[in-house]
Structures are given as structure tokens and as C-alpha cells.
Image 1 (tube, rainbow over the protein chains, first blue to last red):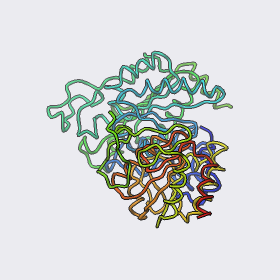
Image 2 (image 1 turned 135 degrees about the vertical axis):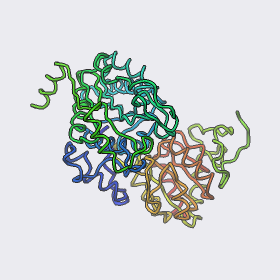
Image 3 (image 1 turned 45 degrees about the vertical axis):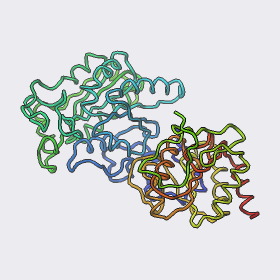
Image 4 (image 1 turned 90 degrees about the vertical axis):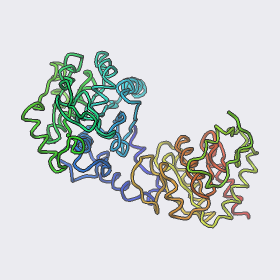
Length: 283
Length: 186
């Protein structure tokens, strides 16, 4: 995408509504890359979220959107689920796929963009829930990693199918009782993070929404490394108060608790990814 | 599944009327246009558009993303022509800035996801879509004829819109100028 498409024609400039004028003047497109530290000082590309109160997924999306190294050259690929509701409202190129199909669509788009814009990096970021990555789209996701596609995959792990009433997902913790899993889940979380490392991902990180800086840095690194080195994966714990039955005000506390046990911060990258990152950081 | 003789006319027709294409309405070839579901010569459609705009109590032009933003060098001249058209028929301009399913201010903009809100809020009796990508234009126009009595006109860049009550294809600056000319002469 060229910055021309976020530049209004002069004839209609005065007719734009204030939110668009703010996006042009104070958004992240024209004023250089933004980070989590800049939140509150610029017009974000995401609208007020339509999720339940205290939603961890909406926070994950907001933090992720604020960490994009080059939003005007980014396309987000989503799939049905809670994440979809906020992503469709973001002022970014966005494509929603059939459920689980996201990494296949992302692979095709990335290949096409490489051919169409050989001189420029066009970032393809898959941002979907745990159902999209670990259950319904697991085969497509794994195959995109095996093939070494230059795409970044972010799982917003709320450990449940939230918007359909609370069915267990592969990422639900063992024993968890949900609306539609009344006797508790019978097997542990699928180790997608570990699988990613052995399936071709050159960078992986496990973070929670309670550590915004780490989350922002992980997503930024994942996108940058995916440009040239290979597939990357970030797993974000984004607890769901509605289905996991805790007060909305406790989302960050629950995420912090997770950091002490099964959601400890972890980051892995290959030597090639490390070299690439240090090279672009120096430049 | 051609049904034959299906008319694309002012609504409200239904909560969500059938797609005109499914009901047998076809798109015009070059030199033709479409009026209320039938193929007509382009010149008569241009005259009809001018008449509808002239007679309208509250005409509104809705420029879409293709001419609101500088996608190409063609956007600005077309935007200027659309602005001139609005002045010629004393129409208000409410832009469709993009296609996001976000909350809108119906007094100042229109969205393809719930265009009825803007049409009803502003009591628009004739609206003109121009510079809107066809797939969003089709859905929005169908929602409008489903839920309002607004008369819809589409000035399409490429293949015309079968969901509009009148639509021109290949509607560039020249064709917009033709409408302006008729408006000024009558």
C-alpha cells in the first residue's frame, strides 16, 4: 500500500470526519514507527473495542497494533472468533479467511506481494485466536511453518471458544470447566509454542497481555524477522473473563498469575534470526 | 436462475431483498446503461439521472474510497467533477471513507454496512454512489432499497451496478460533465 491511499484528495479533505482527520494528522502512518511507549500520544489505528468488559483479546490486539513496525505496509489476516471483531474495525488492510485457513491465505498473499512489490517489505501478519491456530487451522499453520513462509503468526490465546458460548479449545488448560465443557477438559494444552520451534519457526515468543512492553517487542521482532529469515510465532495469553468466570477487573492479575507458572516469558530465535535482528537494529 | 421482469425500484422492498443478479438483471454492455433493472441507451440514462437529481428534495452524493483518497492520478479530477455535480443539483456530500464495520456519525458519513442509518437520519430521497468498489456498493444499495424509499443512482467506474435504480458504466469525468450540462440547461 502506498501512503497515497491514506492521503485524501483536496476536494474532499474538509468533508472527512474528525476521526479520519486525526488518523491522517496524528496516526502512526506519517509520523514514524510507534511503540507501546508511545501509546496515548498518537491516534491509534484501532477503534474502541466491541468486546466484553475486561477482554484480554482486545487488549492484545490494541498492544499488537501499536507495535507494528510499518502499519501502512501491513496486512492482517484474521479468522472467525473474538479477535475478528476488533480487527475488522482497525484502519489497516485486513482479510478475514474461512475458519482456520488463515496461514494458507497469508502464504499466498505474501508470495503475491513479494512478486508485486519486489523492492519493498510488505508485512503479512496472521492474528487469530487459539481455535484458529491450535484446533481448526493447526494443519494449515504447521504446513506454512514447514514451508518456511515469510509470515508472522500471533495467537491470542484466551483458552476458549469465547464468542460461541464457551467450548473448550486445544489451548484450554486441563481440568478447566467451561459452559460447554461441564465435566472439565480431559487433556493438557496443546504445546503449540514447542511445536513451533521444531516446525520451522525461526523466532518464537510466549508473552501475556500483562507485560505490554514484552508483547510489543515480541510482535515487532516477529514481523521484522519474518520479512527475510522465515516464519515466526508469538503466543499471547489473553484471558477471557466472560468464559473463565473471573471479574473483568482481574484480567491483568490473572495474566500476571499465568506468568508465574505456565505462561512464563520465553523467547527463542535461531542464530540467523539473531544476526538479522542485530543487523537491522544497528542500521 | 432468471426470473424475468424483476424491477429494481424504490423500496422498502423487504428486510433484505433478493440480489438483482439472481433475479435475472444483467449488466449493460458498453454504450448502454441500466435503469430499474432494464438495459437502456446510455444517453437516456444520463437524462434520467439529471431529471431525478433536479426533482429531488434532498439529493445526496456519496463519494467512496476510490475518489476520497489519492489511489491514482484519476481520483482528484473525478472528485472535482463530483463536487461540481453536487453544486449543480444542490446536493449535500456525505463521504463513504472506507468499508470498516465501525461506528459512524450518520449526519456526516455513510457506511456500506448500515447505509440505511445515514439515509433515514438525513431523510435522503435521492442518493448517488460514486467511487465505491462494486462489491460493497452492491450490498449497500441492496440494503437501501430493502429498507428505505430512497432512489439510488450509481456512477460506476467499470461495469455498472445492477442494484442501483439507475447506473452508468465507465462513468468517468466526461459522463459526469454530461449530467452537469443537462442540469444546468434545464
